[in-house]
Image 1 (cartoon, helix red, strand yellow):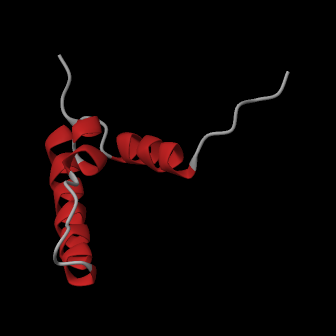
Image 2 (cartoon, helix red, strand yellow):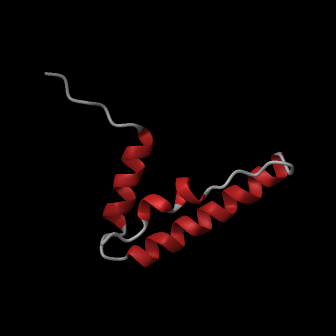
Length: 65
């Protein structure tokens, strides 16, 4: 039976969850900074259309429960 391959995004997500274990607020601050940087870069590339980046950067990391 072949082992399923994880995407690079899944691997990075897992690494962040390990690194920030027990510090969800720290994780969200880190991701928020990355989201702001990505937003700035995308706005420079295409000022007429900057996508909503919340789901990609923050929604998956919100505290559950």
